[in-house]
Image (cartoon, rainbow, N blue to C red):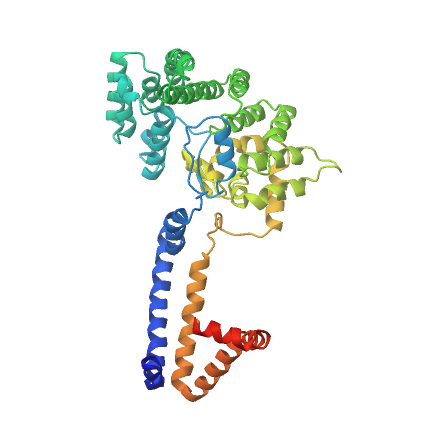
Length: 463
């Protein structure tokens, strides 16, 4: 009775105030959601619901990244589920001491951003450290060195570790950052290879004894693969391309499932330098998997091969369009509408972004120039497609919660305005809407009353 009296005493002004308040709250939520999305690229409500509420309700968060140092099948399965917007390590990244620093000496400008170097530091800690590093003094020193931001402090720590014992990761750091020439870097990597192979053989025998030894073996595997890959890149840069191809093939045969280093992209570039297009096609056939995020190297190497084979069976225009659809911004750099020589490729790339386009054009532009008419064909195809000045990839999709909040805010604001202007008419509409909404329920209740005996219905109402 008291509830009925309270509802009867409410005036239209109360409903206007209630609707206006809800509209104001919805507007504030919308503004906050939009600000959070612009700053962090995700919806706050969606992130909270997925991160905190979903685990409580028994769901599994499929977006949590797997440990990059997990080997073999886990790396492949996690990679297939990763979004194309993820930042990937550049497989053809330059040497800091022998290449990036030389650019700084000549131009006086820093080629790498702090964000890029911070990502590399995280990669180094993932690949080259493990939980048992404190058991060996040299590894403990290197664990701190990879976290150090000052380059000179990192180099000093590497020398300190080498005074204690032959440490493979210390040689890696010196080869990457202290060596001023590729030949000097190669010499240090060869020393790292001796130390790395010794640690790998030792940990391989002990990996099944405990989880600690298993973690050491994963770390030693990552170190060994990294050293061999960089040695192959040194051979490629020093002109020994056939030797580099052999080293890469042997490495891929020895560790076929360890794909986080993307060694096949190094192999493709070296085979293109040798103009061994048949082997390039064979590598593409193996790695051109639709389930994996397409890289510029995969897409445009396929386009280059089809542009080279001008015949009725293979359409060069269609081949270039295939690459242009996925990586349109790369065409600007390959056709030299933008000059990649003024910018060194970063150590990390964003799929379908300018960073990947710069990295691809920096290393592969010479291969396109070598194929007669390929760049002209690509340029003509590019002009025939939708042209834009800047890359639109990766495009952020507006979260559903922002759209829902915007619609709810607009709807409540419209209701408040109509109720304020036409209170009696809106009351009639509200009654009609409620009666229509509850009509099916009333119909069901009437049917139930007609079917059930009156005595049974009387007993149910008394319960």
